[in-house]
Image (cartoon, rainbow, N blue to C red; front, side, top):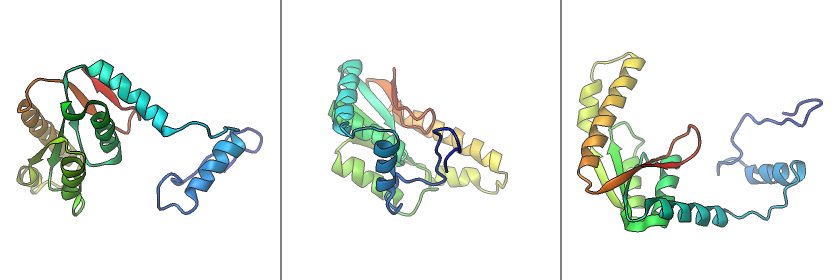
Length: 179
């Protein structure tokens, strides 16, 4: 959609996802044709700059990354691994409420492929028992949130010398390392 008199445009779908037919072309037309950008920017320069900043901030410290298996936390974990390698420990909490094969996929990508120090907390029974009989959505969210924090804290306590916590989140759509 486009505003009638102002340079304001909007979309009601996600052209950036791989299954959007011609999504890349749509974005290219917008960025180059409407915005007038030249297309000289490369993702590698951003990744290299961010990796260098992470290395400087972390120094010799250990970083714990909460890994959900979603895009945001996976990107953070991959960037951290590129920046600090074996100083990274990822914690993945298997709550039993995941998509089919999702836990195995996280193990494969971050344990086997990236070779990170991946801690998988198998909390399926704990979560399912904690949710048994509960039908109220707000109460379910609170139960899940509390159990997740408890399991994550317990697993994090098993990782010696950790100084930083990293997370990927949709809000504010910025990935940060917190000390």
